[in-house]
Image (cartoon, rainbow, N blue to C red):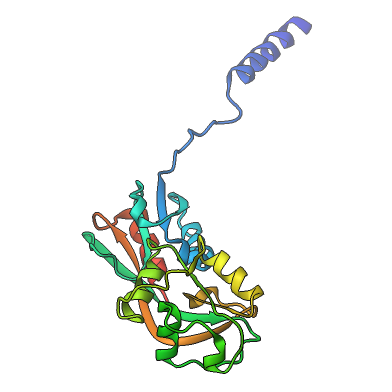
Length: 228
């Protein structure tokens, strides 16, 4: 009796041991897309990432650099229109440029005053109701905000020769927020309570640029960025 029971039990054990209990799914490798964006657009980074996170069929890597670096990216997000327009462009928003000063600066310079300040023909705040020598700060020549300000506000006149150059918007914001004699310009999205911002009537598009029309996940990403 014991032998007859042993054989069926042994067969059940062998069958169970040979049957897989957990199926292993193959690993799916998602495509990775490289997105470059201007340092001027850093305040929009979270919005860029939010759109990327909505796309579950691809991964997105964000890199901050100027388009003049000619990096290998799938899309580049640019402030204003570049000198050479690529095959694909899509507007995803608008950005203003503003002139910024220290909050304690109570002067009210006119457009002509500001043009004279940034070109070096007006060097002291006394002439516009303040006091002290004006400290002019600018962004590097390759920065598109600098190019836009010079072309559209200064009528392509050169900046003051002794202007101090900051590496980027973050440094401009820091120095103007700590120096009552300073003045500079920035994209409006950088404005905080540490500075006073003056609307100078310059508004430019924020553009997505690419060598060819985006498809698939990249197309979804651009469509998301275009939503109000």
